[in-house]
Image (cartoon, rainbow, N blue to C red; front, top):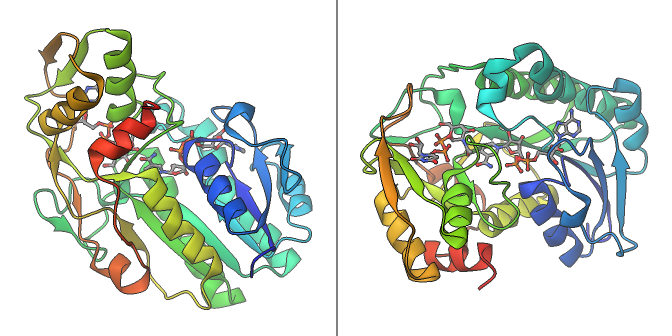
Length: 309
Ligand code: NAD
Ligand code: UD2
């Protein structure tokens, strides 16, 4: 399996570029298809001859088919990752978040590629399972175009599994954090926003009382799982939650951040965001059954790496 060529769509982004590093470290070559809408060339080791970057859109079916040539597996991460963007412009984001997946499936079918790793989201559960550890069988309740596109993508990948023998490894990611996560939008991951503001001494706003919880996983731990899925002998059916089954309040996260940066800037409180989920935690039994999670990165260590300390 080592030294195979892996196509990573969205490989210039936050999770994608961390995955590229991990695949290269395992001896693979990587072809990246990315439209650079949020991805950055500077995230990638472009001087490595095993890295090839093709700038283009996953909504371009002919291009997607062309870039499959010679690949043994696909990791499909390209998407407009902002939920709010999907609410503001469902037609545009549907092209990336759903049509892109369908193009990947068709391109793989033509090229005879079976293995595909897909980044779905905890958003497919909507508010269901809130306050409990969410198991994969929890009824789905997509509340936004983003979540609907992710769930539809899952269903299509399962269709190609049954009809065309695909081996899809589908991961429902909870809250991922770490280096290269873009803090520039108000809807960026809370850790990327708070970290950047803490370093710059800019005030931090907590929406709600700060007692809401999230199941944060460090990107380095996530990509180890993604690499295993690329290399696995076989893939079992059914999507897999990716989280640590650990609830951290925003206040606890800020405490950890203050230990890394020293003094925090002023913190203010604003009303909770409408529709905000109060508690989100992954039941990760299936993840632990199918993959090796190993020792996970403590939040303080992940924060220190994010801040380059
Ligand atoms: P990101 O924005 O850093 O990465 C997405 C990448 O896809 C970017 O490089 C972007 O330029 C590229 N892209 C977007 N639209 C494209 C298109 N039409 N054609 C080609 N490339 C395109 O975000 P991320 O956090 O690294 O997200 C990666 C994947 O993981 C996404 O599918 C996202 O929905 C999913 N996900 C992320 C999280 C999280 O906590 N970060 C949680 C759940 C799911
Ligand atoms: C995450 C995903 C989203 C979707 C959802 C599914 C990210 C960026 N978003 O949304 O894509 O999958 O999970 O449930 O990964 N907050 C503040 N201050 C800020 C920014 C955020 O208090 O400046 C709060 C926010 O109101 C929320 C918490 O921090 O209570 C986490 O916010 P988030 O945007 O990082 O992630 P989340 O869980 O809302």
